[in-house]
Structures are given as structure tokens and as C-alpha cells.
Amino acid sequence: METAVTFITLGALFLAGLLADQIGRRTRLPRVSLLLGCGILVGSGGLDLLPDEVKALYEPLSIIALTMVAFLLGGALTLGNIREHGTVIIAISLTVVVATLLVVGAGLWLIGVPAGLAFVLAAVATATDPAATNDALDQSGETGGFAATLRGIVAIDDAWGLIAFSLVMVAVVQGTGATETGMVSGALREIAGSVALGLAVGLPAAALTGRLKPGEPSQSEALAIVFLTAGIAIRFELSYLIAGMTAGAIIVNAARHHERAFHEIEGFEWPFLVLFFILAGATLDLGALWQIGTLGLAYVALRVAARLAGGWVGAWLAGAPREQRPLMGLSLLPQAGVAVGMALVAAEAFPEWGETLTVLAVGTTVVFELAGPPATLWAARRANAPKGPTDT
Image (tube, rainbow, N blue to C red; front, top):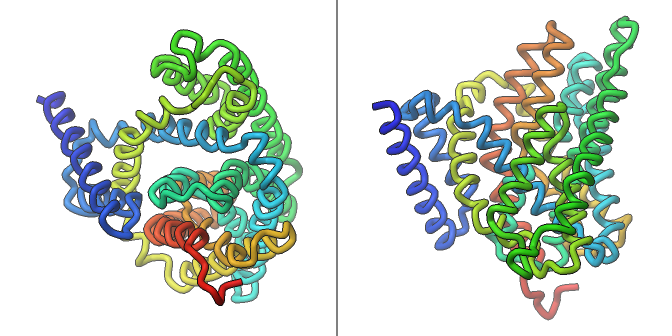
């Protein structure tokens, strides 16, 4: 009976994904927000219709879905794209992280939050949601310079965020009187190991895949690469996002015999994302929204301001088109599991702030996961909208 219920539930969720896709095509509503809303409705915070067996699929599905997204984002880092947009990608990704740390940290401190907690929360705020951002870009249908730049930014900004989070944690731990911590060395090991794993997977994959079916890897080859990368990363406690992105970048640039290196991943990615976003919505606790209070509202406002300012400054420094500068930060609002993970690590290190960190991360994630994708979708369409005769 449990097996039958599981399959019936999965079938219903796929139908919900089909409905969300069709509604998204006919309206300006992001598919991500529709799927998250569906998950909230059927999850424990709503009607509680999902059996435990299906809820248990969330972790493995999220890993596979995000690894696929990482491969596709890495595939956007072609040498041509790097030559054309590399300066903008690096400048914006760095300025957004720095601006988030400074604006959120200083802002929270000025309203009375202890300095240590304020800057830990600021470090958590640096995380983004590459899956939601990438899907909003896909739905927009835009393939110009703005979309290419944004895909490059979300491919690398979590690496900057991880480093920033580790440095802040070390500073706060030392400020509270602890003697030592291996967080920085641990973060550097994770990043270096993840890049090495991406190279170890990407180089042979670039040479060997696409031989059986000339022009592109087969589905079996693509699935094998994704699952191996995710599994090895988990086994050695590395980042499957960074590993997948690195492998994707290597394959798309080194495989001269590939015409469409990630065509097969694009073909089967959506069903995984459907389940991932619905189950992600089912895990969101709407009750946490009512607990975040003034601190949560300040955090949300400061993060939005930091993203807008950091995106504009980075785009200005890199010489990006003027009309795109205010849109870059707006496109980087989605925030999901990475932020919650950072908050849980911080809560373990600072138990006196544990409840505040956890509730705030979960509550504001609901806000940014529901409001962020529409902002990304709008910005992508706006950036590539036809310019009128008075536009400059």
C-alpha cells in the first residue's frame, strides 16, 4: 500500500508541475513560485497531504537537481562568454557579496543587534539559489548578454559566499574568546577539493562522452556524470555545486566534438526540478514568518538594498550597459537551502543565538523564495526589452 501511495503521489506532483509550466507560459508568474506554492499547500504547513515516504525523497532529489543545475551553469562559462562577460561576472559577484556583508551587517548592528550576530546573519545573506535563478532565466526565454552574465554570476557567487561565511565565523569565534577554528582552512579545502573533483570528472568526460552518439552525450552518459559527481562530492564532504559547475565548464570548453554538450541534461532536468521545488515548498514553515518580527523585516530590507547596491556598483565598475545596472542585483534575490545550511552551522557554533539564526533563516527564505523568482523573471525580460526612441 505504501508503495502505491508513493507512486500515486509522485504522479500527482508531476501533473502539478505540468500545470505550473502551462500557467507560467500563459502568464508572467514564475514556475518556481507556482511549484513552491503548491508545495506549501500540500506540505506540513498546509494540508499535510504528502506521505513521509515522499518527503524522504527531498534530500536526494535536491542533490541531483542542484548538481544538474550546476552542470548547466558551468556550461554557460564558455571561453567566449568569459571573454565577453568575464569582467562583469567577477565584478558583480564580488561586489554583491561584499555589499551584502557590509550593508546587512552594519545595518543590523545599528538597530541594536550584537555585532557578532549581525555579521553572521550578513554572511548567511550572501547565499543565493542558483536553481530558482536559472529556471527564471529559462522561463524568460532570454539568451542575450544579461542572461549569460547572470548565469555566470550564480555559478560562482556561492563560492565567494562560502569564503565570506567562513571568515566571518572565524572572526566572531575569536571575538568571543575561542582559541582556534579550522573554518577557513576547511572552506578552502572544500573549494579546492570540489574544483579538483570537477577536473577529475570533467576532463575524461570531455574526451570520452559523445562518442557513441556523435555530437552530444547520450542520456546514460549524462546521468552517469551527474550521479558520479554528486556521489563522490558527498562521500568526501565536498560541494557538489562547485564540482558540477567546474566539470560543466571543463566539458563545454574542452570537448571539441560536442555540438550541444548538455542537451541531454536539459532534456531530463525539468522532472527532477518539479519534484525538488514542490518538496522544497513542502519543507517551508510559514509559521516562521510570524516569528521573525522586526529583525526579520530589517534583514529582508537590508538584503534587498545590499543586492541592488552591490549589483549596480559591480555593473558600473565593469562597464555593463547602463540600463542593466539596476537589474543585476534585483535578479539575485532568490535564497534557499544554502542559507539555511549556513544558519544551522552558525547555530551549532553559537548556541546562544541558535534560535534567532534558525527562525530568521527559515522565515526569510520563505520570503525570498516566493518573491525572488518573480523579480529575476521581470529583470530578465526588462533587460532585453526593445528600447524606445528616447531610451539610452
